[in-house]
Amino acid sequence: MMNTRALWLAIIVVTGFIVAVIAGGLAWIGGVSTAMAILTGGAAFSGFILLALTVANFLTRDTS
Image (cartoon, rainbow, N blue to C red; front, side, top):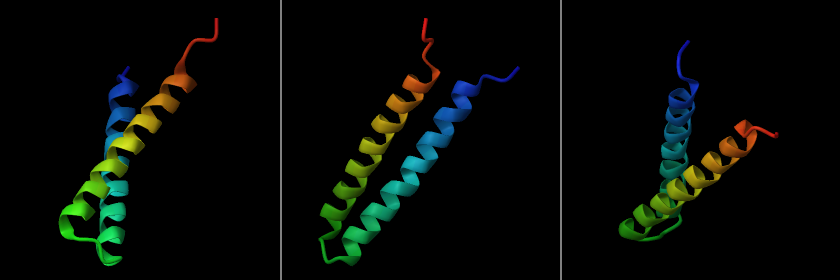
């Protein structure tokens, strides 16, 4: 059986990348400088990854 943890981690990272690109793009379109838009994307990526991994850990934890 395939290890599903690696698959879920890949899905979370790819989704985090998409969130980062959208956040950075929206910031750049909104008139923020390019460097600040990149920082916005990085913050969105790290925030999403931390939240998604925390939720995944909560949902897969053994309750006993």
